[in-house]
Amino acid sequence: GMKLGEGVVHGELVEMRDAEICLEKMDQIEGFLGFGQTESLFDRTIVRVETEQGIVWAWTYVYAGNVDADSIIEDGRWI
Image (tube, rainbow, N blue to C red):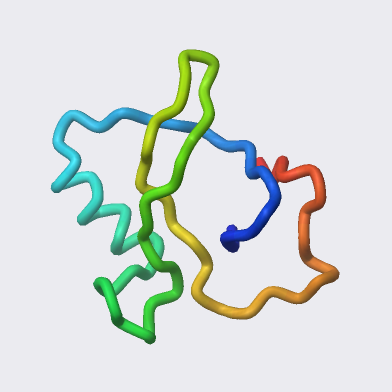
C-alpha cells in the first residue's frame, strides 16, 4: 500500500458523482474504519495531486501498517 513520503506516486484520478456513497463503499474495500481508528488497514487522507490540467486536492488511501524498505517502489509506478 501507499505510504506518505517525499516521492511521487503515479495513479488514477477519478471524479465521483456522489462522493459520500462512493467513499463509504471505498472505505469498506480499503479497510478504513473511520478517522482515528487504529485498527484500519488504510487511512483516508487528502493529498495534493498534479495533473496535466493543474493542481487538485483528492482523497487517497494510505497504508496504515509498516512497510519494509525492500518493498518500496522507487519510480512510484505501482499499477
